[in-house]
Image (cartoon, rainbow, N blue to C red):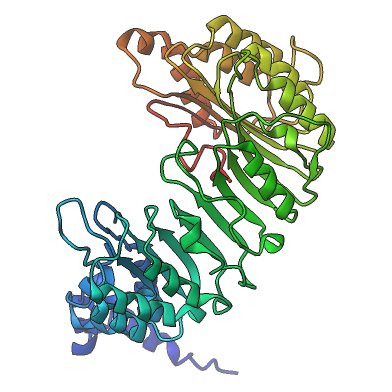
Length: 467
């Protein structure tokens, strides 16, 4: 029986030596730059990430307009992406140089509203002085107010404006903001705000605060808002009683940041916040609340008029709440050794961030780190720590910190930091620490030593920003 040769063998050899020339269309595609080969959907997402604004001294809404002048492809992409046009900033004030704000005149507002289609709107109103000074601004303001049913995020930075015309216009949105979920009222006079946002079924996040902290006149805590449905709140008040008023009205808070320098006298009663998970509390007002579900606490090291530290107050709060705290962020700790009792009251702690004040004693820092050692320290002190960051002044005890770190094999995230640049003397003293850090980084451990780190930034080493 004869064998018939397979006919594809010769064909395969032929194909192996055949040179296929690209077609003219394929050559043209290869010559197109990479930026023009990006799919339109991805290009639009990149556009949204490039958003910058400036109003007076703030950032300006020029991005969607400028993108349309680059090329036809970018113009078509920008015009066909409603979300790119949905952020509108209106500067309705007189600047210090005598010029009237023109961040978004009526024609631009009308054009953006048209191009944004049905996309939810992010609106910002800015003023510097006490009156709205140009008729054209009234028209632009009315255009935005007329679309209040599309507002999703609203920022009003009104500079204590008392213009009754603005207040009357603003109150026309009452009951007409069904999509509004995030509201910021910064440095606003309560009489202007009135009850404009008292009916807002989707509102969950509120910021009520002056620009310059609680020393300035903040919005009264009795401003009419649907407090019972608010889950996220941030505000600052000069009187701690205003903080108590907010807590009493907003019992469903999940996340809260509160600042008050005024001590609140304890009368033995506490406000129960059963759903509160994240709390940033600055000042001596922890004795106001009980939070049994709390998982995360941000606080600062302040002393009252008698020189008392906040540790006893914090320990009492933790024990009273019986919460399983997993994250503690402590700013400006001036007595590191005094922090030990607080940590002893937090056996479930997994993440610890502490920045020391310039007055923090070097020996006290060593005592704290010795107490945190898994071997040689108090038994059971924070046994579940996986993330730790510490540092601050030039006198930071970095060697003791790393010595403690080495006793905790369960740590997966380690940061040591200095708030300022280190002088040459300290750089030499930390050389051994740098060698150890580099060695551990090469083994895959997430550890680093940083200089000029700001603990008070909105984002910390511990992932999410402060409440």
